[in-house]
Length: 242
Image (cartoon, rainbow, N blue to C red; front, side):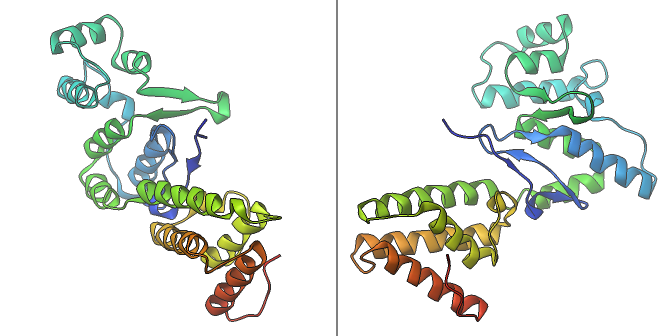
């Protein structure tokens, strides 16, 4: 079962606030978006605005219509527009989104936070303020999630390649990769990686898997020596990865 990891990369920052994203669902955090807006509103004198107003049918009928087509294009809903509007009128847009599993809250009290389908999150962000609109458009040009998934897929390819080696230490292998790319090792370090770091990790894992499958690296000790050599080339030390 794929773990729903929360990313908090610098590539996912708006005005210095890290926007959390879940890798399994792709959901982006609405509470973080509100924090961004409140911070900038205070600094720049913007009008008070709340994300839940944008998802309110009575306050913004046009946004409700946009949400409908976002859901329809993704195959989340397959009912006529009139039926969807009736559902919203009888309940609320957020309650309908919850039923459709496109909106959810997690945690309780101080840890309570709201997540939403990434396309709906984008709609809300673009509606908040012109400057936030511009920053969001630029922010969307990166491919962090795609890069992270690719890096994860190549790690699977690499671990598959080493299965015929004896005495494989997978923790040591992951540690070695982290030292080369990030210069250090710590739990969850890849979840805060930048897009460029993930591209480098993707390339490294691909190259090592190829070298193993072609017989250039013949055992696990040789693989660790290769990782240590790469680390030495990058950092300029002769430290052996343990």
